[in-house]
Length: 492
Figure 1: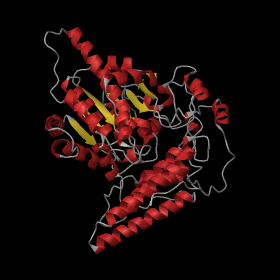
Figure 2: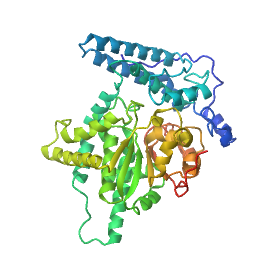
Figure 3: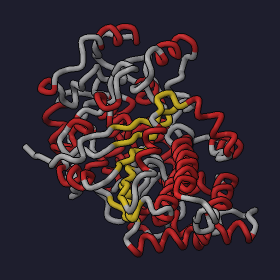
Figure 4: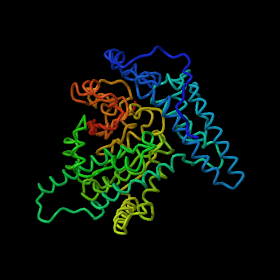
């Protein structure tokens, strides 16, 4: 059964802090690079015992609830099995999930990940041994503790014989996309046919048209992040329709809620490109990935890009993050699927037309999917250069790296109590300042505490006037760092 609200055994924790204390404490920061590490980020870390923060709500209620739903999903699968060996193997997976639930609700100390042969084990256990000895779920930094929970969930299946690739969230991801018909077909109706400019336009008029389309598609991809299953797991179909509205009037109305907005600079830069490469560090599967595909499709057809590289996860992660299975499922569902029972044949033809074009991009190498182990570690992207130099070097070759969603933004900014007006470039540290750092854009619907890149006093005013604004999903940022892409990458 899904977990109800859980009262945790917190044990001996540091003294309580409130948001005011954190702000005062934050005036003594940022830490110098030599004093920064995963347990001591540049500004004060959010931790589960901070009761004023979304970290506390996540660690005490959301994660046990998500894990409970995962156990229920496995029970459903178990009841559909007939082979005894597969059944007993899956029962053992359930027992490991129950052990994880006990560790989570009893606030146990973080143990090393059992070696299941995966490539990320050295990174995980190095970080635990070096920085988190003796830490538990509630007093470790929230970002690490939350990621650790998902890696432990993976361990429940990776130690099995028959269920190594099992995704307890796959059913939910598929179901949510199947309930997204209104927005899916609205986009298909507008972008299914191959893109071309109207006859008779001169170069300036074509550039102006490109800028308008790019701005709209950027916002579609931004707000597509609203359907994050880890937050909206019990949404009704009507709720989904509201969140996924892609009409021009809706986008115009929501642009005022983009609090830190570099869209103009981003638009001018991207629409000046020709035959370039853009990378997407992906966030959610389903409708958000569908929006990413529409976006990337137009970037190819317009001639702005001749290659798009998509970076996903190697394992089920934060409920709805994209895995290779999610990628393949969406492409094939668009071409062959019957998910939308009320759709007309004309609607389905448009969807299939797009799906076939996208699969062709993949065959031709215009679209490429990558899944490096680093994306599913507890490290932030401040450590990308040192812990995954091959990834950093590959991203250096890109003209722009777009990081999608809340989790990627948290990892870019070290998920700490950075002052609201701190520039994006300062908040992402080495991802902006390291020689060879690529241009980086964050498209993020705000759903957690860390916020930077805002005009002066905007965040403080919202704190006074609108409680919960940082977790409502109502507001967003589009932030751009110029990086140092023209410099040679140097590894120490």
